[in-house]
Length: 246
Ligand code: PXP
Image (cartoon, rainbow, N blue to C red):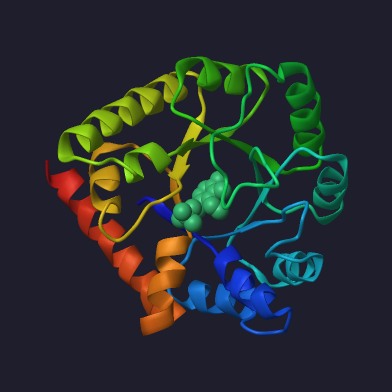
C-alpha cells in the first residue's frame, strides 16, 4: 500500500499568525497518527515561519511512525538534523520570498556538496530523500550523490489547467518513476495534492509515500484532523485497489 505522509506545517502557520501556543502541530501530529498517517512531515525553515525548534524536539520524542524532516542544506539546519536524527530527511530548496517550496532541488549543480552531506546523514542512520522535479538528469544525479529516495514534485501536475495537460504531466511523472526505479531509488511524491487530484496519482504511479499537507489541514478545519487524514487514507486505498484490479 502507498503510505501517507501528513505535513503539519500548516497548523504551525496558523499558530504563528498570532505568535501564540495554539493550534499545536504536535497535537495535530498525534491526531493525524490516530487517523492513520504513516509519516509525519515537518519543514524546519531557516526563517522559522511555521515549525519551531520546540516542535521538532517534541515531535522527535512523540512520533512513533516515521518523522520526515524537510530541510534546506544550510549549516544551522544540518547541525540540528544531525543532533536530532529524524528517521528521514528530505532535502528541499528554500527561498525566503516563496510562499511554499517552489521548484525541486538542483542536484546536478551541487553534486559534491550533496555527496558529502548525504554521506554524513547516512553515517548517522538518517534516511535521505531529495525533493526534485521529474527530470531525468536530476534523478540520475540523485542516485549519483547517494540518495536513497527521491520525492517527485507534483506541483505542475496539481496546477494543470486542463485534463489533457494533467494526463501529459502524469505521463512525465510516470517516466520519472521508471528512471528512478532503474537507478535503485525509492520514489515518493508530493506538493499540491488534494482530495480531487490524488486518485490518478495512486492509480498510475508506482509510489511509496505521498506527502500531503495543505489539502488535509484545510479539510481538518471543518471535519477535524483525524477524520481528514482518514478520508485521505480511504481515498488512497480505494484508488490503490482500482489499480490492483486493472
Ligand atoms: N513535499 C514537499 C517537499 C513540500 O515542501 C511540501 C510543502 O510543504 C509538501 C510535500 C506538501 O505540499 P502541500 O502542502 O501542497 O500538500
